[in-house]
Length: 149
Image 1: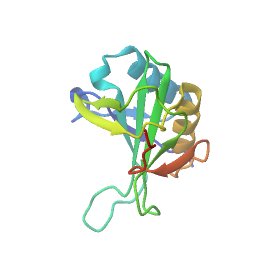
Image 2: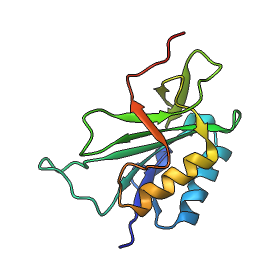
Image 3: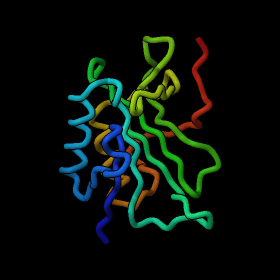
């Protein structure tokens, strides 16, 4: 089965999300995030084919966050089989705090959530290909986890 995702990362996408159906379109989305303003450095993706819960809401959320200046990114995954929101586990940032921005709103990530842009791309494509399953291409940790200073 082929899957498609709705991606939101600018105010213009609120009523008209970007539709991602191929690995090439996923690359184009990440390229757009990298080339764009840092106030839109996070994309939120939802698989269109996944069922909604009893209240009519999606049962998952996948965030792609990128920092073009540092050449890294972070991921967040929330799915029906997870008890906590998960974030990527990777290198520890030299910065005290990691912030990206979703439509101008601050999104904080743990200091050790940094992964390569290649890993971001691979995990995002896996999310699409598997119909919204948690990507296995990266290591995960609970979102509340933080590295001691």
